[in-house]
Image (tube, rainbow, N blue to C red):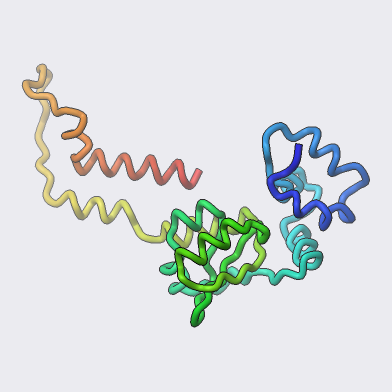
Length: 192
């Protein structure tokens, strides 16, 4: 079975014990990431993989300490999450994004089309990209926005009797508290 990031194998082969890549290929059932597999099994660290890939393919490493707020606005969240890219900087006619797969041509084309800018790719670890994406796009307090929409909710004591009118599913989904719970569950699932 091949890895989803098979392009990384030549860079990591000199760093791994002999036959390690073949053994990892045999053990992996579904399509998995080589980068994440070697880090998860503690064969290499994220930094070692990043150094090896950047050196082998002459790619710049992403500086995730300083992210331009304008870059966040240029790259829509669904697109950033779909291709696992992090907008880092925005320039005049270009956008710099951090990626863990610089050979994903579709990502580069979609980002170029969506932003109307030249896409400059830099390299970063997949875990760091996911963490920064959550930090960057989930920084707005969704719960506070929903709570503001609730206004002055009427609170009343319910009796132990059968309700006379039961709201339909569509009516119930419009209630602010139902929306709040939906958003909390959705956010929890997305952030794992």
